[in-house]
Amino acid sequence: MAWSEKAVNYNVERLDVSVPNQCKCNVEFPACVFVCGSLRSPSATVSSATLKALIFSTCSISNLVFLRLRNVTVEDEEGFCRWISFYCRFIKELRLECVRGLKNINIQSSSLESCRLRSYC
Image 1 (cartoon, rainbow, N blue to C red):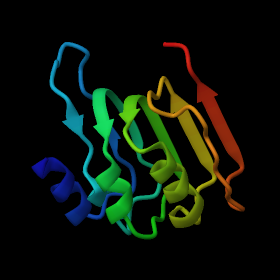
Image 2 (cartoon, rainbow, N blue to C red; image 1 turned 180 degrees about the horizontal axis):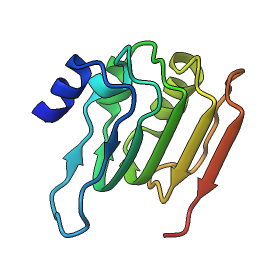
Image 3 (cartoon, rainbow, N blue to C red; image 1 turned 90 degrees about the horizontal axis):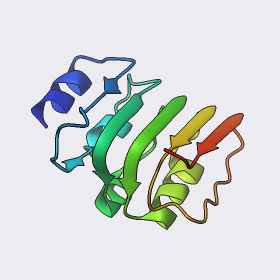
Image 4 (tube, rainbow, N blue to C red; image 1 turned 45 degrees about the vertical axis):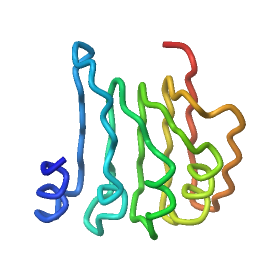
């Protein structure tokens, strides 16, 4: 995904990603987006996307304040919760809508003010 590297290099503060429902491809979201220093409030609205375990094991501290994931699959539930708990130190709002792969969400964060979960699609 060359577009993500360009967005990170141009110091964007907000990133909205949308893949049309007609796209039958399985998009792997790049880890570099989550750790971009300038990125504050990414909103990932994607269909048929997968957040793989490798993403969370390679990410470092993130400046994210707002994160919205919609219609994605998380392959590493424990890794995702650990990443939000320990590496998203500034996150205030987390929205998870129709996220597959998360059955036991265990997030411990002193900065998180709002967490919205919606499981029906």
